[in-house]
Image (cartoon, rainbow, N blue to C red; front, side, top):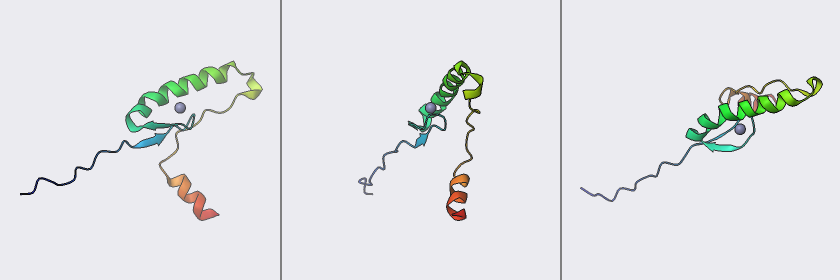
Length: 72
Ligand SMILES: [Zn+2]
């Protein structure tokens, strides 16, 4: 039995934070997102009411992008 089968290293799955747009590992994004959203809310609350933005919503996985390509 050959034991030299290549071991495929588990590549970290990177996800992009929908709030700040930065890349994070699939585990760290679950930690980051609530913190990032809280920070966003704090900053947004400090703005005058006419400058406040609607809270970013977590996008549905890939469907929005696919639709974007097909409609153009
Ligand atoms: Zn973020």
